[in-house]
Length: 174
Image (cartoon, rainbow, N blue to C red; front, side):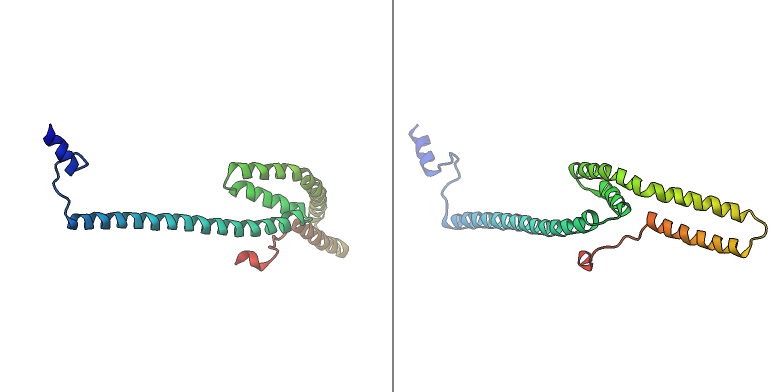
C-alpha cells in the first residue's frame, strides 16, 4: 500500500510514466506555447473578420439608404417605384425584408394603377384610330400626317409606361 501512495507522489496523474526530464518539460511548455499562440491568432482573425464585415455592412447600409431615398421616396414616377419594389421583393436576402418590400409594393400599387390606366386607355384609343386609318386604301395628306402624329404620341405614352431607369449618382457604382 505504501508503494502505490509513493508512485502517486512521483506521478500526480496516477500512471507509471517515470520521471519528467527537463527536455520533456521544455517540449511540453513549447507545445503549450504553440497551442496558445495558434488559438490567440485564430481568435484575433475571427474577431478582425467580424469587425471588417460589420464595417462593410454599415457602409453598404449607408449607400442603400441614400439609394432607396433617392430612387423611391423622392421619385415622382410610380412606374420606377413599382419596378424597384418588384425587384427588391425578388432579391431581398431575408424573409422579413422581403415582406416589408411586399407591403410597400401593395401600398403603391393603387397609385401605380391610377397612373397607368389613363395612359393605357389613351394608347388603346390611338391604336383604334391608327387601325381605322390603316384600313383605308388611299390616305389623304392630312390622314398621313395624323398617322405620324399617332405614332409619335404612342411612342411618348410607351415612354411613360417604360421609362428609362436612371441611377441618381455615379458613386453607387464604385
